[in-house]
Length: 604
Image 1: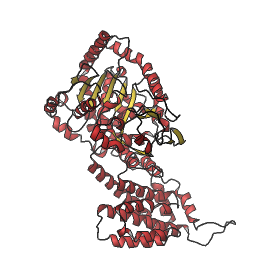
Image 2: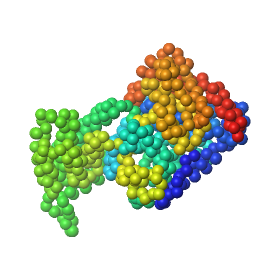
Image 3: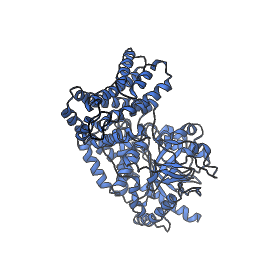
Image 4: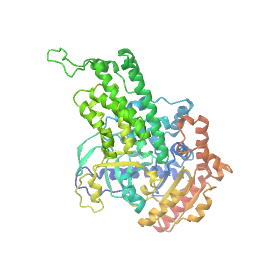
């Protein structure tokens, strides 16, 4: 069990650990009853964890199939912990959001994929809204416009809202994995335990440091362990984007995001520009009303019509530019800036860049107050360093975005391009910032950063082993369901290496033997040792459920398979394969639990 060290301030709470312990104790009777129904008698509930690996939509659908079959076979209530990485966390959030009603979750999944496409209006609105946050990053874009689209599901509830069923003991305790991307080099070189970050319905934080905050305060600003600037709790859709931000390699992600930015840019900018060029209030109002997140555009247009710098006290308009004219000039800057950034990012030596610089400078000059200053800086573009160019492009939009909510879309696109430029993901405030601690484990460098950058844990190990092993927790049996692309044993081998480096008990694994089995694995592998947990590992596609067609099934369900290419038949087939895998291994799971319980009884 994770227990917090004594906190120097109220911000680092011990409550999360206490609440988790209480949930585990509440879960004990459920586990014992489930085991008794399977003919296994015990007085103390064993700590059994089910792990779901990453693997994008393949993992999302596959893990739902696993949970469904575990429920059907009466095994789900014997599980104490559910822990997931990347795509499996999407399945977990659906499962817990529906109070563990896996039949309903499965039915809803099928219903979503019966439709030819998924309406993204709410997701687009949330993406545009999130771009107004100070810590907006590509994670917001990815969460609302890609993960929601992939899963065809928008979840506006919060992680803290999922604790009721868990506190009653009715569901396993959930743990969602991420890693600290700023510590990723230390992970690569030293397999640094501090790299791992976890989320539960009660807390978020670093299990290796035993440093947590209440989940409702995740994303808020802290100083020396004290809450200094509260922020609203982010919704599950955002967290799903954070947990599942590496469903493809970096180059595939970059191409997909860039193509989507270009598509949105063309859709929003050119349509709104047509309305401005025609000075057409009706067209702009109708267009903006049809664009998600732009409700109330008529009221906004009315406020635009009054923009002339200011109003005199008696309500008479001060001499200046009308709303349409000001909107057109500001929109020109936004559009030219978008075109310039897109062209530059595509080809820094594009022949048309000098002309674009001149046009953008002229457009900036037409804007009162700050415009001429930015126009002069724009003309110095070619003499700037790459860092100065990046800073300029991040700053230049902001003085010109006060004309109403319909302009927020252009701001959203520009901020997204800036994040793309810097490849910035998972930006949140560091709750350890300027913490004065007597605990040597909380290294000073962890407290010097104002911001954290949290990303998909699959970049480290594509399964959440480090969150159920010491020092986080001390489970006795791990049921590891693997949905990874490529080597189905990579997670086991990577975990064995991690445990060896840190002296954590883990059963021995024969690397050479597993490499031989990688192409045509069996349905279940059991790893046992003198100390540490027993591990049962289940490759998704194997000789039992695929016979001689393992490679064909792997190719059928690529990690970055766009949800639009999924049919109901593909979804059903994948659910069936995952369920079959559990069904085929039921007796092995029960036999292993019995053996583990007998061993524990003898040792006590």
